[in-house]
Image (cartoon, rainbow, N blue to C red; front, side, top):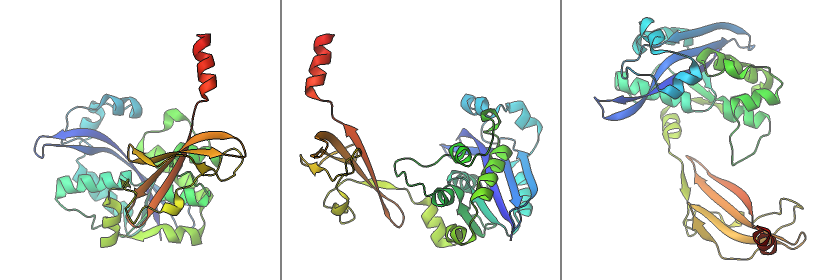
Length: 291
C-alpha cells in the first residue's frame, strides 16, 4: 500500500460561463510513500489556467509564481490530472485539512461535470490525524501545518512554504514522525457515498437553546485560573450565533463572560468554549479619571 500526500496551489478565478468564482488549481505537488513510509517518488506540475488570465496578487506574492510561468508550461488541468492519476494508482490520498481535496473536487466538477472523484479509493485528513496523535484538543483553533512541524522539531524556512511540492514534503515529514498504524487506520475513510456527504457537509452553528442538539449539560464553565466551577450570574443571551452569560468564580472572586458555540458537523456537535474578561468598573473609572 502506498500513501500519496498532496498539496495544491490555486487561484481565485471568475467563470463567465458559470457566473461564479472557482478555485482554479495552478500547481500540483505530491509525495509518494511506501508502506514503511519511505519516500519513493514525487510529483510536481504547474497548470496553465483556463478560467482566468490573471493571477491574484496575494497568490502571486505567496507562491512567487507569475502568469508567464503558468502559460509557458502548456499543461491543462486534464493533462496534469491524467498524469497524477497514474502517480496515485490505488494508493491512499492524504492532505493537510480538507481544503485541497475539496478544491480537487471543485476543479473536476468544473472540467468534467462529475460530483465525485472516480479515481479515488481512500482518503485521510492528516490535520485531524496529527491533532489526535499529538493529543491536541484546542476546539477554538485547528492546528496549522507549520505549527505542527515546529512542535515536532522539523526545520523549515517560511519562505519555502506555499509551493505545492514543498508543502506536501513538510506534511509527509509530520506524518512520518507521528505514524501510529492503529490510530492511523481510524482516520482512513473509504471514498464511498457517505464520504462525499461527509466532506461536502457545511457545518453550521446551533443557537436556539430549545434545539434538542444543544446539550444543556455542556453549558457550564470552570475558572481558567483555579479550575473551580463558576456560577452563572445572568441569563443566556445569543450574540453572533454564540451563547453568552456572565459567570463568577467565588474562589477567585472574579467575573467573566462565558461564550459557548455549538457547531453542527456531519455526525457530531462540537462544543467550543471561550472566556472573555469583564473589566473591573473601579479600574475602568480610575483609568478614565487618569486620562
